[in-house]
Length: 103
Length: 445
Image 1 (cartoon, chains in turn blue, yellow):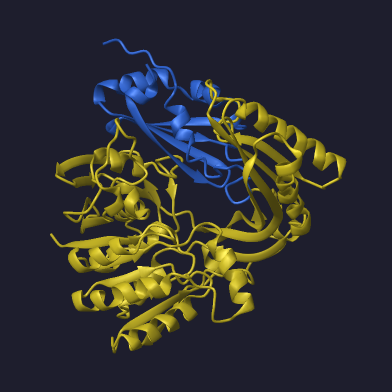
Image 2 (cartoon, rainbow over the protein chains, first blue to last red; image 1 turned 60 degrees about the horizontal axis):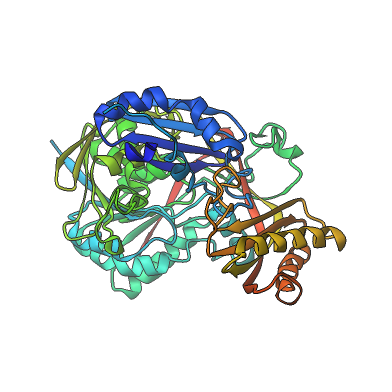
């Protein structure tokens, strides 16, 4: 199972920092996000796409995590040579993270 | 309890115009807010103003104003926008001319000024965060410096009776916060309400992104009629709690999921969404569906403001040259890779001075590099070769090299495109708010 099966996501950008939200479709999957979608796993999943740290923030009342990823946008949106300088596609990468859910 | 209705007329400079007209006509709105300034738009507008003192405002201002002003006048909807860009006064004068042409006699338009701080910044004291140096030590050609203003100047203009308020650089949520402060008489140290008003602004500032845009994923998250996406409306009460909705009969939808995604869009620490007037706290926000296309948003909060304003510095960074060519059918990936290898060898061999080189295959590794490269062979790929140079002439050599692959490269290369551009980039720093003065100029049609 992939994260995409239990959660949705949106990317935002500020300078060279990308933030990616991960939001559970159903409240019962919130503990799965909390346990399995750690900053460390997210960092590994993006590999060389992210040069800096990844910090996780938790919003339990809406079943959401927010990942702030530093040095993630090729030097910054306004000067990056990347095809996707805003990193809009990064949320789609995160949603491929493998997840284990006991049903 | 008193409520007001605020609609979004644009979430970015190139946004669709019809949804704004629709909202003006049928939204029963009090305010229609157009957010039209991206990070570097104002630097580009500043360049335009240097060439022509009457230029430097949003190129779509004319079309937007012609489309909505007569309706807004008839319905009593006040307009707020940062379409003033680098030149709010010229934007206001132009709006007055349009209003006169349309017979909207007596329409009052205010231009809010004070964000241009190019002459205010101290070369020795202002620190550029990204470059870790002072402005004086920054070895680039600086073309603009604009502070993100808070709601104050807009509130003053509304108090003075402005029907249309045009600003330059203002914090996006502040354009939505201002009418709430004005209508409800909020104090500027009522951090909770300022935080909630900021939350409303944050949810509305990207227009269709809260009504089903930037959301659809067919089969998983289907969204109806995106070609007719409706723009959002917030019904705000005097405590700053709100219902986010949209017009019936328009495309898209407003539900808890669209609001949650937008709540965290471009947010870092949700406890500290730093704005000129307040540090908004989104960490305990409750989002509840209360009807079809109606979502209640409550429990926002706020902390005292920092007393500093973010300043964006626009500068001439570098030049970029780019070329693309396609390969298709069996062996497309191998031929695309061969093309990239040839290009690498050519720029070294003929000595094109590049500060950064990026070669990739669209369809294989252009977005996720080799982290998630395609596992199956795509039936077509597009070579993208892009370099950073010091000047445009050198940048143009890249397109020429890609084009020469037609005759000198792998078999079956087609559809070359080439481009050059000068990059105006942005860095930022913080300025104590007492270093600038915000004021407005009122004009009447």
